[in-house]
Length: 271
Image 1: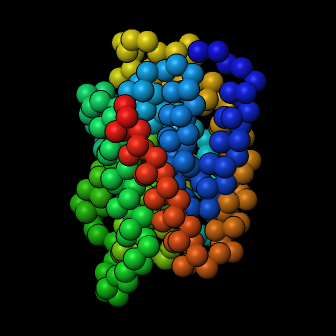
Image 2 (image 1 turned 30 degrees about the horizontal axis):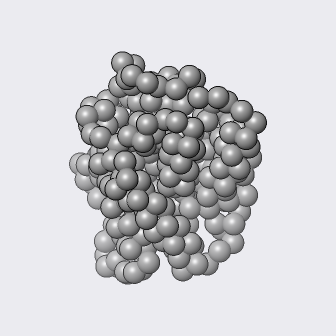
């Protein structure tokens, strides 16, 4: 697959958009990257089933970099709940490794696309309904945190996202404010991305017909370009997140997820 100037431009624009969204919504940009990288790879001759898997893996790898840039900006504003990060991280790493090393390689790309569309739609609906949690509900104890982290890491590994589509609704359901939830989700993106990226590299070692520049399921040219530009935009997204009212932030989150879920449903049906 040729790595031409048009491809570089497409990936750079995608990186700018996803970097901004990483800071704005705490989703690591993965919800946007997966559909667009799938499209970019498909139009350049990568078989549809493999394109979905590579998009998921490459998207996840870029979150290693965008999460660092985003969380630094959130931390400066004192918005990250590090106690929650510490509680969820062990389960996240375990769930991520199970997904990326085992289940991901076994499932067809079309099924992963359906899975992506379903869970993203569910998360968008939860945000849009804006149900108020019971005032007495709080984050669970250590066993509950490890279990929740495992679910977040596992689902993230299957759809190539930083976990915000699960962790943000989960934290707000436990009465964590939306801005704290978004900031904490950005911090959780790093262990999710690192654990899953390593799993994708190992799981994809013997895959046939990978394009030039791939290491396992990760497409390195896309990783380098997107990561390089996305880190510049994440702090601007953080600034916008703290300036927007809560309801507007949730509407933006939900609307974006619905659109991307529809595209991935289409890809699953046509793969």
